[in-house]
Length: 300
Image (cartoon, rainbow, N blue to C red):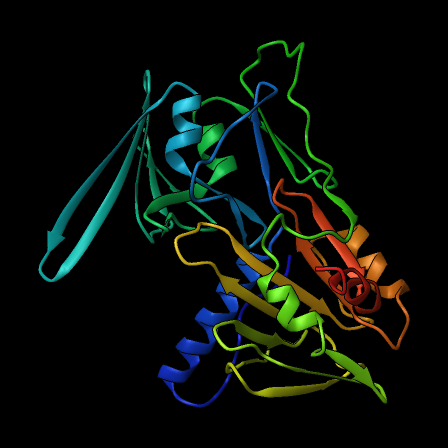
């Protein structure tokens, strides 16, 4: 799993700004996770599952209710501190968890999680495996398909198809405004160096393998050696849309631990090129070299 922590010793404020920018970009281009319950795909109409510390985090309401559980929320205050609690109940099984706390009450026992419940995009996210198993379901993970399979013991005879998890580079539907500004008459490789100007209105960052990073500014030009390791993230938010156009740019030799096939592709590209990674509107992961992507961009 990619590490999204950035250690810039500037000031507490600048550190927070850089870190939040890099996290948002990485999440925007992160792998799409499919969650199925007894072979049927669970729909997430707004906020989508994401990874945190090798855990799949899911909006708790949709999966819990698909399992037949009831979900309720409670907000209390203690002095100036606001406490938000999520309660999940399925028959005699009861779970109570506070937002941002690793300690969860399961029945009358306290369980410590690797990742606490989070509040993201007005949805409460929780570790999928923990909640599903606490409610009596079995959970399996398919790395190549990015598929979480939850089973209640029901025989599956007609499972929903799962979109291919990886493929040849393609655009994300009609989301190509950023592509036109980045890959046409902008990003280039000369004498072993990658140079580009971040378009105005876009967000961008660089994170090295060792965790150090830089947050970009719109309108400024940046240059990196192809011998660098890590990735560059560039994204554009479309006003009024829930989708983002986002690209991850990997240098040759970069380490990618969360996707073995993509990692192999990076190591096999030319030392004079970089790999561009994104995902299509149907959630399929796609990647291509800068040379290939620029040829495709010419027809936009």
